[in-house]
View 1 (cartoon, rainbow over the protein chains, first blue to last red):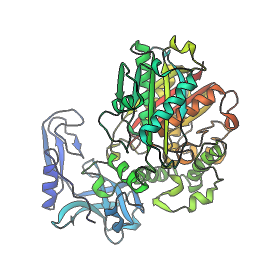
View 2 (view 1 turned 120 degrees about the horizontal axis):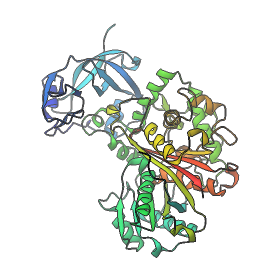
View 3 (view 1 turned 60 degrees about the vertical axis):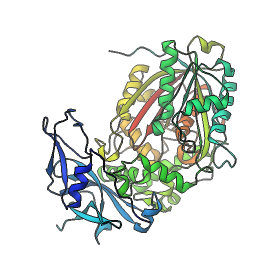
View 4 (view 1 turned 180 degrees about the horizontal axis):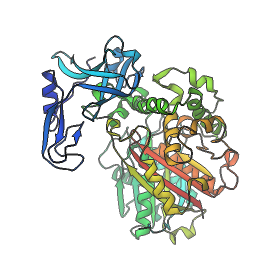
Length: 135
Length: 386
């Protein structure tokens, strides 16, 4: 069974379009400067509609993680055990991503990670993910 | 500005049978709970002029309260549904209080129920619950409700050095209480080792750190102060408060402090009491970490101390704060929106002195708390003997 592919909407399309080009972009408010993780039409800090997209450094740290052994849906059963993580990006936003790579099960809170793009499904839709960075 | 004192009373409470109930339906459980709550209050169906429903996963509907009122056969003058996950029951009650105190209603029925165990399979329920995750930014990463609470647990363990046994003690303490309740789903004795050796669901959470999935229903009737006079055994609502900081766990401002801090502070202030005054607590416990984090965020225990307190028996009968005296969501049962209502039902039984073998002697004040989503929506209540 295929893993789910995000279905972008008008708020989120630039994020996913950039991911297809191996780029992570994040929304920043042009008025108050606040970055936000989940893209919106308005700034979640000052409610301004003046938002811009900026290239992310692609680096962050593990804020928390879980090694998942019970899948929410059939599609994820083949992935078990997988690592679900909250990643604090250098820009100051927190993303939910999977830690992938051979050493993923060694993940610890505070680990430095970098964003990689993992193709998914028949059309190779690229999903931002993270790998642990060599120390 | 201090909020006005509440005057509303809880006049009727009931829950249905619990667990695996073949042949049950969501609406049937609503009706069963309603009949029992009316009987408990000494009221008749025609006395109800307000109806608040929650949501049902087996009957997903845009207008559940209209569907229920038609099914049950009443035409209330106020009728709506409320959806706030596990906080639904407490938020329904808080809304019912506002309705009777404003004069809009005399007797408001808050009713919930779901046959999510026999009506949709355990896998189906787990998948449906995962839809609280963001459809683009969380769910495609294999987020589930247990995995999301596991993210909180991992952060919590890392920061406060909680031990495995401290987490397990939360589940063991609930099971001890469930053993005293004839309706509880899980009544067999449970040891720390059984919890710590149960299979991993999402590290660090194991199977016995998690709540049950049950069929069941519950109803609570809230009445205006003067309308409560003719009822059998009313209980006072003394304080209420809510706290809402996020929906998605990736957007939570903290992984160790939650909206229960604000909601409980509001409820305590309105009631004119403090956490130390509470005789018995009925707090949403979808996972061991849920209760542990809430007990500390609310201020019943210092950070890092709730697990130690559970190990020392402080959450049990005779302890400093008997908590979830019915067995909670991990041992009594969990039927979605109704799960949070079981805590209210138990608090009322305690304050009336009707809790039989599990009665906390002389209980005058109870704290009830509901949490929806991933520690997202919080509602706290302080209830007291009339």
